[in-house]
Image 1 (spheres, rainbow, N blue to C red):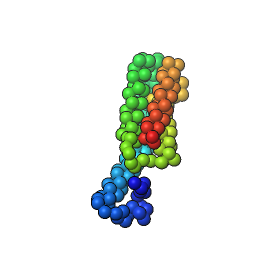
Image 2: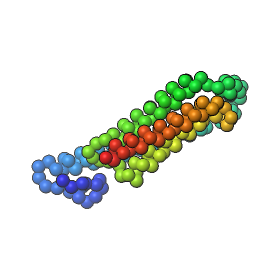
Image 3: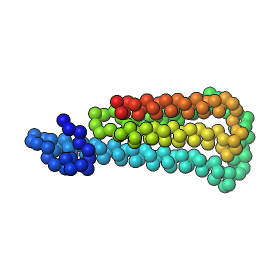
Image 4: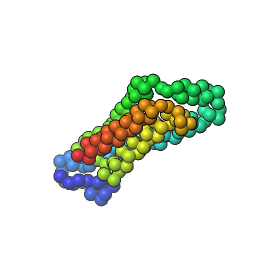
Length: 170
């Protein structure tokens, strides 16, 4: 069986008798679904990263008393188990979303040049989110344990992203 690329001349022609045009249409539909899910996921990453980066800055401008109170709480140090649980939950939710986008299937698949940047973007966005959560507008907020938890969660996220892409490309 040929590998048919959406948009090529052979994908628009009937490839013989016995239902093959239906296979071509199904392949086009599956390809379009994959591309739509990748676009939606990329938009989700972009909006989430921008929101998590701008929220502390906007809060400092519009609610300085609330920010001061939050910074006093954060300066005293999070409960480390709460920090680890929160970062683990955020990591697992984002990785589950990436796995849904890149679910293993016989066809179609993203090329490695498209799949690996998606994994790197996922890792960078969640790492920025962790840093924004810990710094909250001040780079000295949070104890060493919280920063170590963020580093550990970031590394775990990179490993999981790589594993998800490898499964998709296999």
